[in-house]
Image (cartoon, rainbow over all chains, first blue to last red; front, side, top):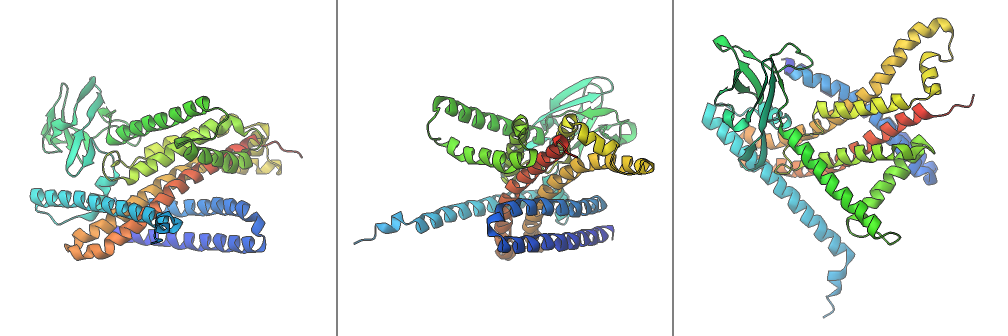
Length: 69
Length: 366
């Protein structure tokens, strides 16, 4: 039972990260299509933002790892 | 016949390279399968138990006292224990894969889930002392497979970089050649895309650190993907390793922090009565940035390994070779994705380290 709740937690963390990274990626695409010459700068900023969001989601995943034990 | 142009075609060459690469990946998955099959068979022989995927997966991810070479071959590694009575060293082969106890000089030792325990009277076990359990009777300083794999990667890095730097001395002013031409763009990428934009004009002081972090994480991520020797260990998916890497970042950032950095933390531009609230928040901010680095690398690499191993485990859960029709292509896909993740996580770790250093040494003009 604890295992399944942990899986639920991992799923919820992934929903949050999905929404967040989706937003970042979408807006970055928009930015690049508006200003293709700034693509490399936008890309780096996008990766940083995506990594920060992903970090928050991974906290959730790690907590659900701990729940597995 | 004018067919010789086929051999010169770039497309053909590319597809041949891709084909060889995919074949290699498939070989690799078969190697994992082979290994899993052996282990599953061994498990059923010994305990007559159902296949337990989470146990197998956790065993592959965790540290161990033997270095896995290929198939069922593995070499035992030295066990070094610091007990309350003295130091004890012996080979891990004495445990016979956890089936036998070893009578040492001071205590009797037993391997439970790849961790050394002291067998006390009445067969009660006391585990190694850790940060979480400081009053244990022994501290485990063994050369485990993660340590062995780390030393291997360090030797590899030394060989690669000493040979490349020697080449730069020997071929001064000439175009790069061989390994040099592979590494030069990567090093320039770290300098021009990571260090310079984020740190500013004083980036040169931090280049050795950033390059070391980048190549150490990258090479260990890649070694971690190989299921047989020299791989087999999951170094960057070990929280202790990522903890040390993140701790180095914490030290470097705070040692290099200038007065603006510390002013921002202890005397920000807010009303004075808010300081008691701001200080804890800012101090948590100092810790949480490297903490996120630690968790990010650990969780990304561990999650990748878990996904690959779960897909392989599906074959043994359903006890049917036909499941491999689905699971092997997925494993190949995941492995290719992991190649990307291996480089990406090294990049992100280095980039965020550079970013934190950049904010710490930034000059403000108010």
